[in-house]
Image 1: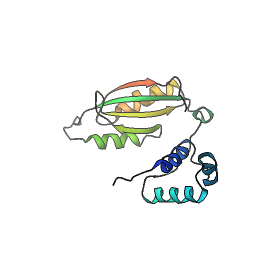
Image 2: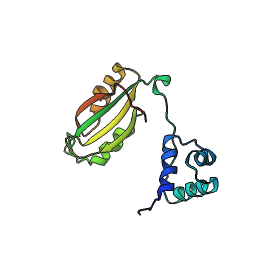
Image 3: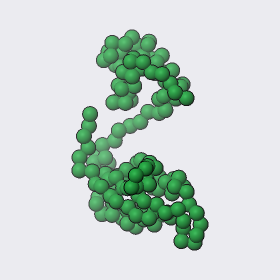
Length: 152
């Protein structure tokens, strides 16, 4: 179902995407939209499923996971024993790995792209070579290490 958003809704969403801890009062002060209107619009967007959840942005370096990488994965749809696999089944198995932050089925030269966080290059190596490539259906990988994230 498509939900129509107006400029006020978009302003509120933009604020919450930058910091989900903003209160209705803070959003009101920064946007000029009355507090009650902000509160009611947030509740409406939650009920309509526009706002699905709230999340926390973590400083990975402070928790020992300073290495971030994107791994492009090519898949095969048949196990060695001839059993068929689905792309979604392979993606779900990959997503279960604790280092995997995001997992998307995509078009193009890769079938799946994942975002991972690791404690070190050696940890990333172990993840990709010894664990990820052992998952049924993973044919090959191409890893890009993030040098710097650009924040808005």
